[in-house]
Amino acid sequence: MEKKYVENICCEVEKESVKEYHAMAPEIVQTSSFHFPTAEDFIACSDDEKNNYVYTRGTNPTTEILEKKLARLEGGEKCKVFSSGMGAIAATMFTLLEQGDHVIMVNTIYGEALALIKYMEKFGIERTKIDVSSTDEIALEIKKNTKMIYFESPSSQKFELLDLEKIAAMAKKQQIFTVIDSTWASPLFQHPLSYGIDLVIHSCSKYIGGHSDIVAGAVIGSERLVDNIFENGHQSLGATNSPFNSWLAIRGLRTLAVRMNHQHQAIIQVLDHLLKDHRIAKIFHPYCGTVEQKDLADKYLSGYGSLFAIDLVDEDFGKLKNFLNALEVVTIGVSWGGFESLALPAFKGNNLAAIEKRGLSPAHVRLYVGLEEPMSIVEDIQQALDTAYGK
Ligand SMILES: *Cc1c(COP(=O)(O)O)cnc(C)c1O
Image 1 (cartoon, rainbow, N blue to C red):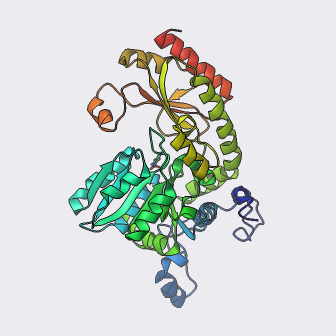
Image 2 (image 1 turned 180 degrees about the vertical axis):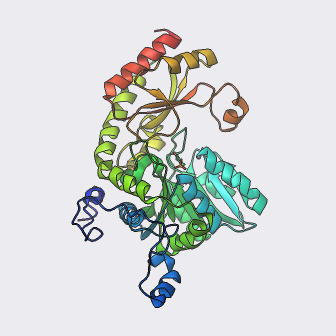
Image 3 (image 1 turned 135 degrees about the vertical axis):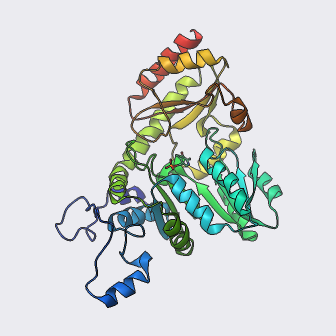
């Protein structure tokens, strides 16, 4: 039952958690701390914070509803929610890595995650950042002290897929942790734990929240690993999600399946039109990928996320700005996963070296298809291209 209608988890009423009033929506338990009837209760609970409500920096009933839903959606034993995706990433790294450990970062990963690993050099963490076209190339980078393979699939900016099963198998042989940031696919379109990946990270600021009104994150995996991340990375770094933001994420989950199914259809419709446009040199999205990429998409994705990127044929910065300024339905802005379509240029006129280092062209623009009528998004992009680059 759960496997077949897994998206129903999003809409399930929390009958157990909302005993008091039989309310359909769960309570926002907006409290910092919890009280105890006796000294004995206090002592027992405060010695085991992950299983008791003591202080909201640790656990909170509203946040716990979200954690249980996300764990089940990913098919994991346990989930810990954080106040941002980066909070979840930082807590995971901080907990699992030790001085002298080596991390392999594969392909274009989220910029701030890369910055974090670089920063951890001062704690003696080594890193190798590789761009691979085939998953097998990762094996060549494994060293004696490799402790973690960290990746996204599809990756940020270029949306390249990797073979999750192969990565999990090569890592398991050498006791290396595998951590995937699976934000692009949401917990509905890809289930990395079922292929042997150790931990799945989501920025809940994107599809899970779904309405551009929260910043939150989550890590999902085995009870042993997630408890370790709770005790160390979560409790010590303190990136605690507020009960209200957890409640908004639960509300976002209610419509996740409907939104994702719409966005799967919408992205195909938009890409079918843009593929024909001579002012676009390249489209980065698994739907437009190579045969190998399409095979990986068939194996691992049950639907397409609606975040993609284009390289315009012309690298002129003035024209790029004209294109962005001419957009009317699509808004210029960071983040994604909400209701509104978005455009985000890689090049800002002052960061050429940085984007070239990431393998991106100055004509690279990340686009997000939101919940507007898909043809209105196509027409908007086309009219902005007409304005900036001519017909
Ligand atoms: C946004 C994002 C993050 C960071 O999440 P925050 O909630 O903004 O901290 C990490 N990975 C990916 C792929 C993202 O898109």
